[in-house]
Image (tube, rainbow, N blue to C red; front, side, top):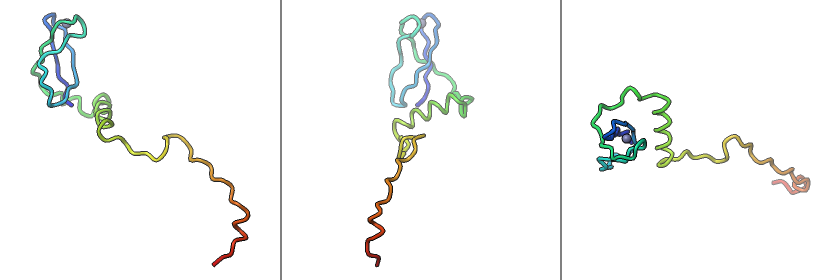
Length: 93
Ligand SMILES: [Zn+2]
């Protein structure tokens, strides 16, 4: 998702992550509540590969393609039950 930059009439700037299909051209300023217009700005290529960018990408990816796990990370597998001694007396092929 691209990061859009907004500026209100009081010159406060803020950023919002919006989907590419978003058509919002304004958003309320989080500082003063005034309507803020979306700015046309250069792509933030310098942010690629940063810790912030990785966090944003992994958060967005987890909503669409969550990692598949077979158990709770960090948890040990359940202990196996002790073998039944009667199984040793069963006939063998
Ligand atoms: Zn403002």
